[in-house]
Length: 308
Image 1 (cartoon, rainbow, N blue to C red):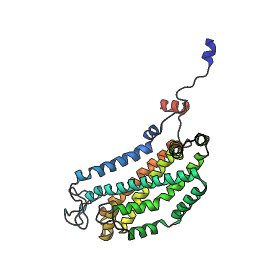
Image 2: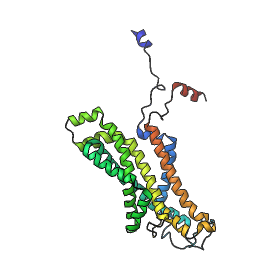
Image 3: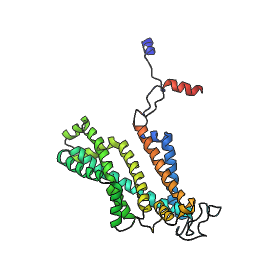
Image 4: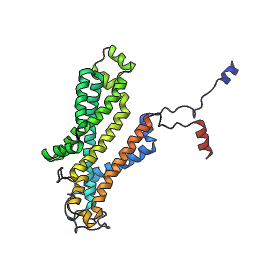
């Protein structure tokens, strides 16, 4: 009896497949950590902007077109405004618009995608038709037309970006929901008499967490970039301070022609860094949730790393 027990194969902890939670997987992912660190820095700057640079960031504080120095780290604009103050305060509007557009577009995409996949038939055809219409409409011209005819303001920018940005999310989420709709546990919930809303949001949606997260991050990137593009064209509220308006005023004041690179580079770099950070987090989410991209340590890898 004792000999038989001793001969039974045992599984070493190193050979065991790691059962990591989604949060733990993100925390231990280098791409996610780098992306989150960059985003934490930008969010902290946005929250502390009134403390770091109190008062109106658009006020004239020095001579015009000063190069970066010890007093003005990023120089001044052609009007004499501090570029660093404009950049830090601009993060508040840009991040707020990006996050709001991302949440709203993803929420609409979830509602349309789940309803279309679950109910099917006429509802699916109607919602798919509306989604296809918005997907076929040219994005930039529609953005320009809506922004030009609606009253200027932050609310208008958010509304325009949500109207033009939800269709892609709905299409992706519908495809994922359709594959989950055919699973046995969903059929069992339908047979047991569960309400449609409970099945969609308690049975189907939790199994779409990774793709919902990826869609949200993509929509946030879209919101920040599209807002900057609209405002650069002068279709936003030019009285607000944002990265897009900073680029708009830099172009109007001839910063590129005069070689005043310090006026437009900071806002452009901030937009690129935020998009890069969110893209890293998006890729990390896919890496954590996709078994094909996930690295699993084998006993051989463990022994090699220990020997090194």
